[in-house]
Amino acid sequence: MLKTPSETYIEMNMPGGVIILKKYGIELAMACLLLLSFYILSREAAQTAGNMSRSESSQVILVDAGHGGADPGMIGVGGLEEKGINLEIALKLKKVLEEKGFAVIMTREKDQGLYDEDSRNQKAQDMQRRIALIRENSPVLCVSIHQNSYGDPQVKGPQVFYYEDSQKGKELALSIQEQMNDQLSVARPRAAKGNRTYYLLKRSSGVINIVECGFLTNPDEAALLQSEEYQEKVANAVADGIGTYLEKQEEPEKN
Image (cartoon, rainbow, N blue to C red):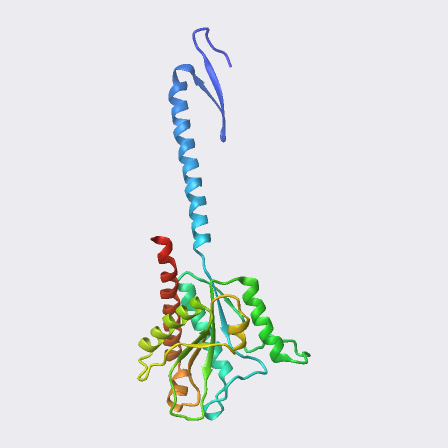
């Protein structure tokens, strides 16, 4: 490019090509470039921080729909099988938790067990694989959805079980039990109960509850547990109990 002796030019490489500026405009151009660079870097840093924040705040919850496949679970009034009720409530719980921003892992999403068809002990293999899923995914907590039964058809009401030696498991159970008793308008509220014999509770190293949503041997409760509306109430109550528990776990960190 031609120039007079009194004029000085500078070439600057930009994304859109080479820009040639006169010397008297260099200072202004450099200032603009610095501001532009600062703006771009600030946006990238903010975006990265936002992504990290979302990743760190993402809490994984494992929802286990008890039984399935060849294992019907408890048999209630009129031959009602537990496995189907468990799955319907578990899927509704998954939806509610995801709407609250949690990542949810399911042990099953259809009527099947976690065993090989040719397994010599399907029940044992099924339970072992449920425990393996918990260990592999390291969820912040796990809830296993079940239904109860009893010889006396008058007995009813939800009840949450936790492993006796797990303080956090107990705290989760108390939170879920409270929400279920309240939201389901339980006439005779049950208390969360510690247990040492249930396989899932014994073998899981993390925070886990078994949620018995009601008694299939009670005609009134069995009818409720088959209704979409009541299943949604159960799912919401469990989800709210989980949310309350997790909020309390975060309080010491905030303080």
